[in-house]
Image (cartoon, rainbow over all chains, first blue to last red; front, side, top):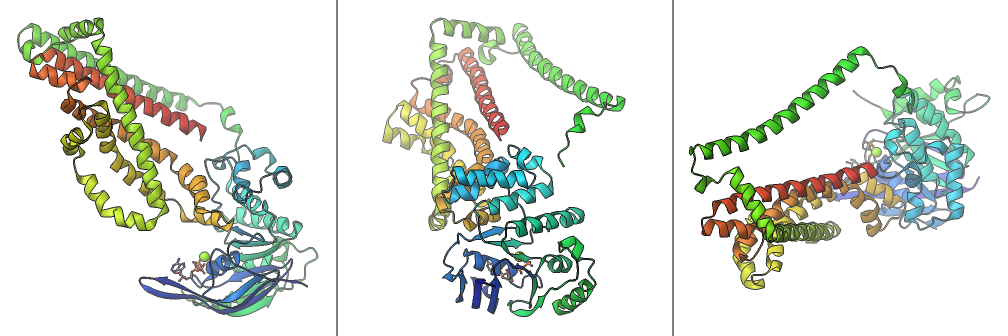
Length: 255
Length: 272
Ligand SMILES: Nc1ncnc2c1ncn2[C@@H]1O[C@H](COP(=O)(O)OP(=O)(O)OP(=O)(O)O)[C@@H](O)[C@H]1O
Ligand SMILES: [Mg+2]
């Protein structure tokens, strides 16, 4: 398989008046085309920071990140970022919301609009495109946020706890849906989550980070015996619990 | 999920009662407001007729009405009211626009914002009307200096309020646009400004009242035309009917301007 993201020996320090925070320490990771990676780690260990680095809105203090062989330097065309909350703009309709990335990139034209229309119709928001965000349910809003990310047609999706604002049932349903969409659109995805089950169910590999400064503690290749792999079905596989226990132990959570 | 069935649910008896009660309270409030208005003017009139108060000093509603009729016959009423309205509108619109522009500059350059911070704090605390005589000397006794007064009274509040709204904008919304590679100007246009429309409108609401203060003080000083001029003139020649009439027209003007901004606010709210 082809490498799409190569992270080599990156460090990141935040500087504030209170002092210096080392958020990421000597982290290296290769991500392959079409892969689904989950990242788990203790609170504040640098997961969001890692995604910001990959997306190019933050520059590493040292080390390099390349995407398709090109070094990341500023927000990259190939990367779409989905944040924890949907951040749909209340003053825009759903249609206007999902094209905002295209607007910013000056790529609003007939073919990109057709592409967005297709995404909206295909993923059940076609009838809602003239609605305002508050008229949609939490799950639909999150789907709209995903379509906004897909609209600029990135190869890599960064998902920073995108389901954590949803209630449990919706969360299961929407994570299944979004997983299917990502697979169908053949994207590479990096998901940050606090939910170990979600991490295992969705990913090909789960990366466990240490406490801050974030380093890679271990990487788990997820191989589950289920006929038709989707996040919900996978949860029934006999190996699921084994992975869960392993990762749970590594996270070393004390309460 | 989107619920289309909500309207078709039959309304229960309790709910009808509930709505009725709310409606009755509303009517009671409106009636009381109107009665209070009538009572005040009626009492004023009766007190003047019975010489409980001296109508020469306190004026009286019928004399006010007579004054209004007299003043409107020769057109002076429209002239002075028009002048005051014009100065106020120009003053608060320019105060709001200029203030918003300066707030944008402060948002754009954090450094400038920090440098100007103590100056803004002092200017905000300073009663702007104290600057009246200075403006009069610099610009002269003209309509312009009255408009500048109105502008000065509203601009600092505008800058502070709008700027506070700008920097309170959700960081993640900005981050979202940054992930698409947005420039600072795009962030301003697509998030900061639209997110602050209702904030700016509410500043407009404050500014109507403030600019009116500026205009009246300006008219006191310049003493050429406007309701402020009528008030000060009436006071000087001891025509209390004229003073009271002007004050009452001024209240009506203030209410009308406020309602106009309120209407604008509703209109923009509907678009959203
Ligand atoms: N802009 C910043 N300035 C200074 N320190 C920061 C900044 N952003 C994050 N940090 C610090 O860096 C560390 C890593 O932050 P980050 O948000 O990447 O963690 P996280 O793993 O995403 O946490 P969480 O699980 O709570 O989402 C934290 O200790 C945080 O306090
Ligand atoms: Mg985070």
